[in-house]
Image (cartoon, rainbow, N blue to C red; front, top):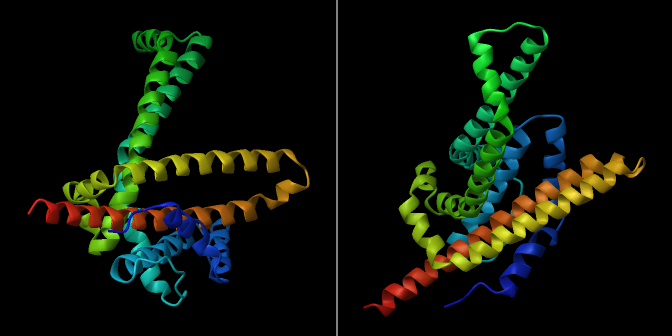
Length: 254
């Protein structure tokens, strides 16, 4: 049974650079600065095709041709839509946090204007606990975001494997695959967090330099394209290995 190793990691990190198709991916991503959302959907759809090829063919990561933009948009919309559904609780928490902040600011403005009322008095009491509430909400958001980013790769790979939107929500199915290769997906999560931190540091460095800040859009586009392809590529390799481990365990129990 093949196992995910440094060879698989090396394949995932290097396959985008095998030919000039990665330049097209960068151009597509760069166009997001001009056209919102649509280019990103095309990029995710392109990545979706890569995942399907790994699952249906020889398990190798390759850059396909950019030859079916309509299908790319359709598949990208399915991936983006599934991820959006899973992110709804996080969006609700963001909305709640900003609502609390707005109420707090309204209370301060009204109090400074000398407009007192029972409602404002109640909000003033709430304002005393505002820092604690914000800290709790931020902590919950951080935990939820970490859990979300940990399991989304398995859900996305399962969507590609079944080629159905609803497959992303078949938690029992992709959850067993994730469990079979838990360590691999944990490594992917840590690599994703580390890559994001490096990217954030690089952006801050470019932003602080007068000349290099002009490179921000180009660096951002290249990173988004590369990170999308690598994360989805590594996700499907881990998913395929999880399936193989499940099959091996089933054969061993017979």
